[in-house]
Length: 97
Image (tube, rainbow, N blue to C red; front, top):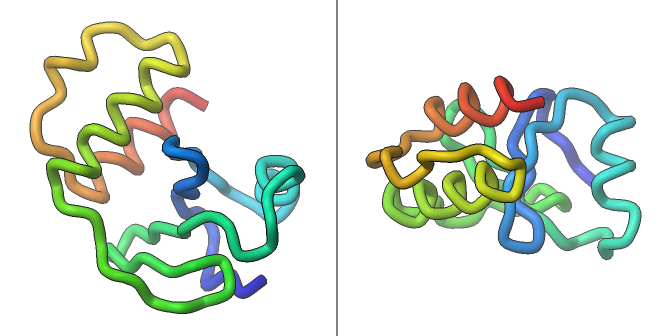
């Protein structure tokens, strides 16, 4: 598994998680395969866990994914969240940890 740096957002099973260290990554990926999941970095780069670059999500798709994750975490009023950038996603998900 190739990780560029911490923290990053892990896109796994249609949800996002803020990952700040290797221990958290190991816990989150316990039941997934070594190539499952996409790492999203603050600079907007999207990489597979094996380090392969992939196309980024559209702002609309990222927003829906952030909304879904926030709902799963018990947050309300997520429909008020408008178009979300990668930086916005980092801020929102870091704050619910």
